[in-house]
Length: 249
Image (cartoon, rainbow, N blue to C red; front, side, top):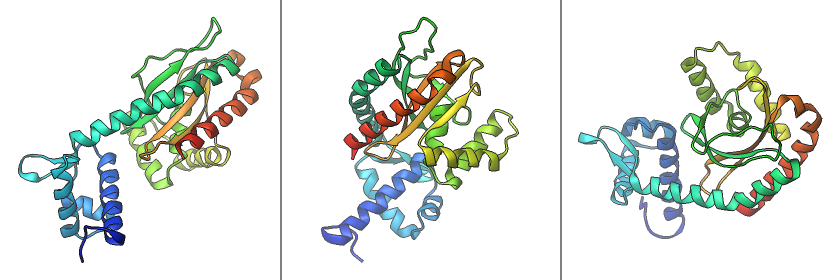
């Protein structure tokens, strides 16, 4: 079967290449051809031809001897360009949300097994929460982390959750955690109620960008005033997420 050119054949090759790139994104240390073929459910020979084409475009690279394949410099450059456009695209919405709720608003992205902060608009209160751009936050105890986990299927989410629990030496209950994620998926809102930092509560909601990367907008609030502001912040955050999604779509 011809796997290049126009028509359905060309579309199929693009879809397969995209599937391979997504699999490689899940494991930044690299994967063997056999493992990639298993993950995307394609013959090894087909995967090898697609990988060869991706290598030509520097979208993937292989280690010495070709034993391990990982994302290449070109795909990372494209990812960085997308990240900056996402920051620019969301900036006005973050500002307006912060002004509406008078609290700090954060934008973060899922990178590997953690949330990375891309942008922040500080709140106007003297007692407020502030994080630095580039800060790394865990997935299981934060509103933004839980928001993106709720957008995944249970298999993918469970892998990330249990890996984090293992790294942090936490004995978690997956069934209980999965129920929380299901509720977040149904409502569109995830919570951190003093789970990550005592004295700080937060609400978060997720969205996927044009490349499928998962992001979250979150509003951390000192717990002393969280309860009185919770409903209003939730409504404002959901409205903001809808605005952002409408632009992306």
